Length: 108
Image 1: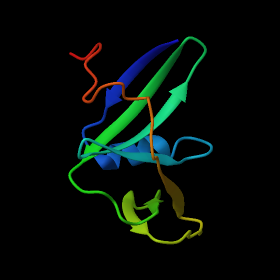
Image 2: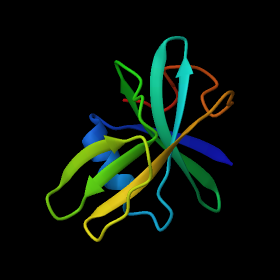
Image 3: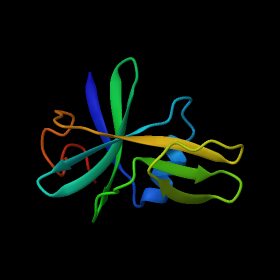
Image 4: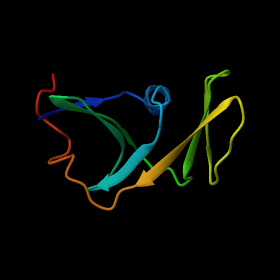
């Protein structure tokens, strides 16, 4: 199975993409002092890893996306209401989805 990488320009676009998923969540890992937030979408013959790099780690455990106002905020606890989508951030201890960082294969 081939692996493709798509680096998004900003965290806002990353969150908007994730909230389109039926079960949205974000994975976080720090690789060599790079704060990487990612999600992997696996298809039949290939896997696509969408990611964004931030200068600082997000300390809260949840991202709240208000789909009516198109705003993003953060929370330390789960929140539910009709306007917000609550997206958990899972901190990854180790991973092999980034064999090297930054990924070099196929980038233009």
